[in-house]
Image 1 (tube, rainbow, N blue to C red):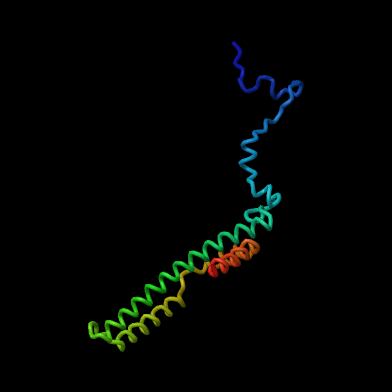
Image 2: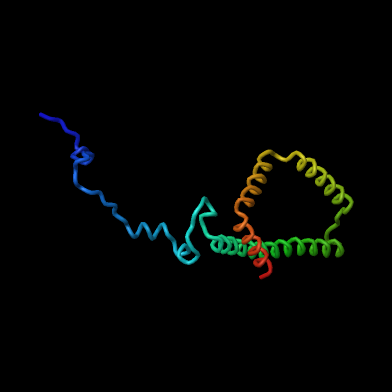
Length: 158
């Protein structure tokens, strides 16, 4: 009894006259080639460079606008909360409900400031590595980054 491998049924034989055809799945092709590729042009290159300049500017601008808009809203809420709290504290202090020792507050703030300054001078290597990586990313993706900055300022203004 002969034991033949099922995977070698004449497919590797150079004398075989069967031609091999590639089957193209259009749904897979459509998944790989998104609509923005048709609108903004073909893509080539690594990471962000595989998108055209218009696509990079659009993606950076939209994400920047969203970030700026959220930053503006959160900033307003935070400023209102801090300012309102300080205003209420001042009103309570002048009305006699609360007695604040401002000399002690100033002394504690200066102490905390010195402590933070000392800790900032000994920044962790992870922070320095993160800053270097972020700077490198911005340099490599200058179009995307400039779109983000422009969108961020537009988001702050809106």
